[in-house]
Length: 234
Length: 235
Ligand SMILES: Nc1ncnc2c1ncn2[C@@H]1O[C@H](COP(=O)(O)OP(=O)(O)OP(=O)(O)O)[C@@H](O)[C@H]1O
Ligand SMILES: [Mg+2]
Image 1 (cartoon, rainbow over the protein chains, first blue to last red):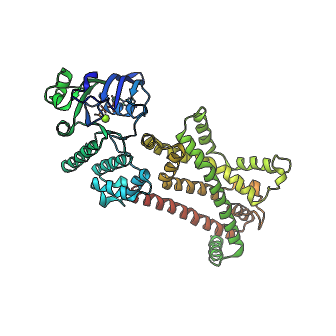
Image 2: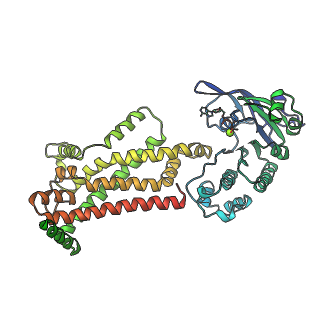
Image 3: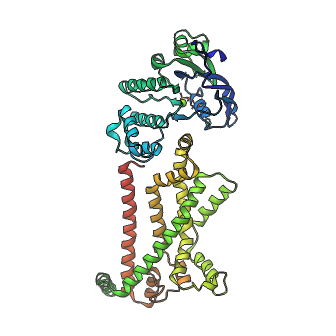
């Protein structure tokens, strides 16, 4: 997958995985993954349930032990944030969840909540928010850490179309400011809308990776084609 | 039957008239058991937090031990503290035997394992949920435990109340190390035991009433805490 950069950009990737494997309880869940994530833009990971997408994000984020190498280009790992598939919110108000990361920077907290359409919810208990609002709060909190690499696990999975569009706009802005976004999604239309790069995963392996437009329009591998046409049985 | 009714009438009068002896006993009980609860929380909650969040050799054994210690019979605790504090014991020089301090020590030992074991359960569930998020945010160990304790505060309050309930209601430990000395170490439970055996049912019943009201108050408090927790959805 070293040929990932088909976009014409020549700069070093944000991160490169070589031979990355994760084995839990004797099951190989990620199998010698090779991939490069370009520095610029939004990269989506697509793939059937159980393909290992969430595991891959958690391995990159350093939450689970793995074999193989993660290369960060120049030196140390960048500041990164992960928004989990199931948001983990503290048993506190929305504002307190933001303050947990931001401290007393109320102005920033306000701005981020407003960006996510949560400005009226600041004083509510975070865990009484609707599922979609919880996802938006988790994203706001992740952005509050000013990540250079933003890992998103199905960030719009329980959002209504308008909210999803709003988040997509936010993500585009964040990416334009130079943050690398690596995002799992099941929404192929969404990938078409916002992804610059795409990779299709299946059974712990990357089946195909490249420019999003190209892969989504004309996948080269049978696995990616079957997946995109809804014929792939996990 | 008439005796009983008469005793109950006197008991109620005693409670309502603010009888000096009675309230002295009640206040000492509260002082001893509240102090023991505070100490047990100070020891038990950090211990529970440690067991909930840290992985180390012997952790499993420690959890089994603390769970087993929850069932310690109060008289056995009393006996152990008695041996430690008696004139020839290792702590004999402090002269604490038959003082409220001895009773506080005994009750602390009795309920600290309860507080530790229950807080471990509460905090471990929270830890499982929060751990990856906290690591993702790069939170240090101390900050993570502080956040766990804060987010578990309602559940931990009910843990403290459970410890207090156990302390205020036990007889075995305080009678062995306190000796039930009038105006010095006589608490509600030991007084009830003594007055009943002497046949002074009125005072025994009066104290019993107060004890039951206290139990009710504790349970109402637990219920209240649970409720407010639910309402705030900090559950
Ligand atoms: N901690 C774990 N222990 C054992 N197996 C696990 C663990 N975590 C994940 N798995 C397994 O690894 C596989 C991949 O899981 P993962 O959560 O990465 O899937 P996914 O691609 O994110 O799927 P989905 O689209 O449903 O979210 C699954 O078969 C899952 O059962
Ligand atoms: Mg997943």
